[in-house]
Structure formats: C-alpha cells, structure tokens
Image (cartoon, rainbow, N blue to C red):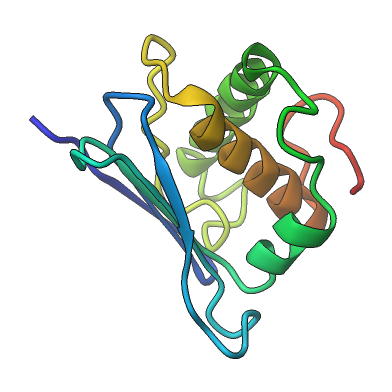
Length: 144
C-alpha cells in the first residue's frame, strides 16, 4: 500500500510516500524559477514521490547548498530524523508555533532507506526552511 502525506508550508507542498531508495530527480521547467519553484524526487516504480514547492528553494539549492556527497548519508539521515521529529512536534502545537508554517506532519520512517538523494534534498530543504523563515528546529543549522 502506498502512503502519501501532504505538507503545506506557506507555498510549500511536499508529497511523501516512500519504500525504496532508487530515485529520479527532476526540476520543473519554468521561466521564472522563484514564482513556481518545484523539485520532484521519485523512483521509477513510483513507490515514493517527494515534491517540494517553495519560492526560491530550487535556486537556493543550486547556488548555496553543500554539494552532493559533502555529507554522508548517515549524517543527512540523523539530521533529518531530528529536524523532522521537531517539525512534527510543532505541527501538534498550533497555538505555540505558526500553523501557517507547520500545517501537516512529515511521514519519515527511520527504518526505511530512502537513499542519498532523498535525504540530501530533505536536509537541504530543512536548512533552507530554517534560514528563510527564521526557525530553529534542533541543534546547529548551517547559515548557507
């Protein structure tokens, strides 16, 4: 059975459904990348799909993010586990945290190997999110 979770943060929508680590990454064709910035990750069998839509994320990823393989997959997984856990906690506290930023939980299963690319893009989105929206989910956040 395929699981999907929708997360909407301002103009962010992330669709997640994961069971394997084989992935294909594509960037939406758009003459104005900040108006409709989309990054899509999916495997060929469509067992999972992640779509990140947030103005500026794609250009930030291309210009300011650490290069691929700068961090190990285990480093990215550990940071994602901490940050996503805090994210999900904030979703459950709409009177304490801005419900426009934390609208829905992220279904990130620690027992699933999502592969390097999914973890890389999630990690960098969470760095982008924390720096752009002045949030601190947990621990050190690079100011890239």
